Length: 397
Image (cartoon, rainbow, N blue to C red; front, side, top):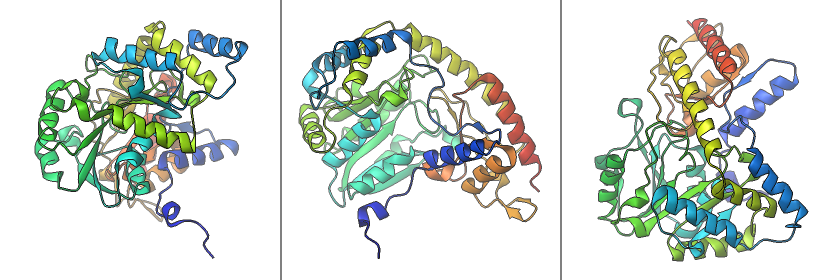
C-alpha cells in the first residue's frame, strides 16, 4: 500500500545530488573518483566571515531569529543591492531563507496557482521544474541550444507567453550552462515582458560574482519591469558558503510579505550564526570574491581548451558560473562491449564507472544532448578528469 502523497510521487529526485552520492559510494569502495558533478566552490569560507560566526557564538546569538532574517543582515543586503547593482530596496522587501533554493521555492509557492504556467528557459537548473510541480503549476520549457549560446531570444519568449503565464524564472549567469545575458539581451526580454503585466520575473542571480563578461547585469535595472522582479541571491557561490545555507529574495513588498508569511509556517528564520557570518560577507572586504573569480576564470579557460580536444564534443565558452555544458550527442548510440549509450544519463554513468569521473547528464537540466561538468576543483583534477574522459570515450565504437 502506497502511503506517500501524490505531491511527493510526482517529484523527480535531484540528478546532481544522486550523481554526487554515487561517486561518494565508489570512493568509499576505494575507487579514485574525480567528482565534477557538484555545484559548489572548492574554496574554504574566508577567514573574516568565519571570525564573525565565532563572535556570534560567543555573543550568544543562539535564539530564534526573526522570520525574514535579522535587520542588520537585511540592511547589509540592501546596501549590497544599492552599491553593486544600483537598486533601491528597503529591509522590508528582503526575506532571508535557508539558501537561495528555499527563496526561489518560496516565490513559486506564493504566486503560482494550480494550472498557472511558468516559463523556464532551458537548459535550466534541475529544481525549477520540480518546484513548479509542487505549486501545481505547469512548466513551459523554452529550449535554447548551444548554437544560440543557450540563451532564449525575445521571439521565443513572446511565443511562449499565454493568458495563463504567471511567471518566468531567469537564471544569469546560468546553471548549468554558464551563459550570461548581456544588458542588451536582458533589455530585449524586459521589453517583451513589459507588454504582459501579469508576469512575475524571478531572477536567479546566485552566480552574479562568478562572471567573466565584465560585470553582472540584472533585469531589475529596467524601469518597465522593475516592480515585478524578484531577485534571488545569497552567499553560497560568491563567498564559498554553500553549507551555511543563507539565501534571500529582494522583491516587491507584497511578494516579500507573502514569502515571510509562508516561511513563518514551515521553517521560520534561518540559522542565527550563519546570518551573522553573512553580514560580514556582504558588508566586509570583497577582495576574496575577486580572488575566487579569477581562479574560476583560469579553470574555465583550461577546461574549455581540454574539452575542445575531445572528438565529437561541441563546446562553447561560458561567460560565468563554474560549469561547462558540452553537446555530447555524437556518442549516443555508440557501444562499449554490450553496453549501448542511449542518452546523457547513460553516458554520465559510463564515464563514472569506466572513467571514474562524476558528471551530470543534461536530461536533468532539460537538455538531453549535453553533459554538465563542474570545474570547481583544482587544475590538477581537471587535467586528469578530462584525460580520463577522453580515454573512456575513445573506447566507444
